[in-house]
Length: 112
Image (cartoon, rainbow, N blue to C red; front, side, top):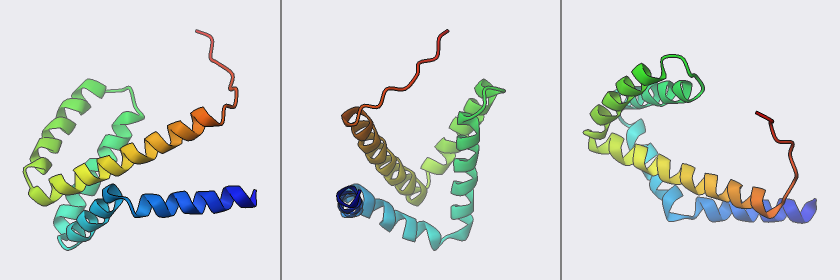
């Protein structure tokens, strides 16, 4: 367990030192200087998260979310923040997928 903890700490440090993460931290700092923009971004992110977990009204919600995304993306600071956040999420997702694949634990499959 101790070796895994040390390696995990090293992985966290490597992620924090990555260009993707540093770009995200810089964009986050800049967004925090504009509370109104931060609020808009956070509201957009919450709606996107809620829509991912719901099947009700997914088409209508997707359309509205795309319009809101376009509106936010016209603001350079919001666009940079959302892009940087997306890059970090892809990095984390890839890392988790590699861990899951490399440490094979058989999980039951749902029968349809």
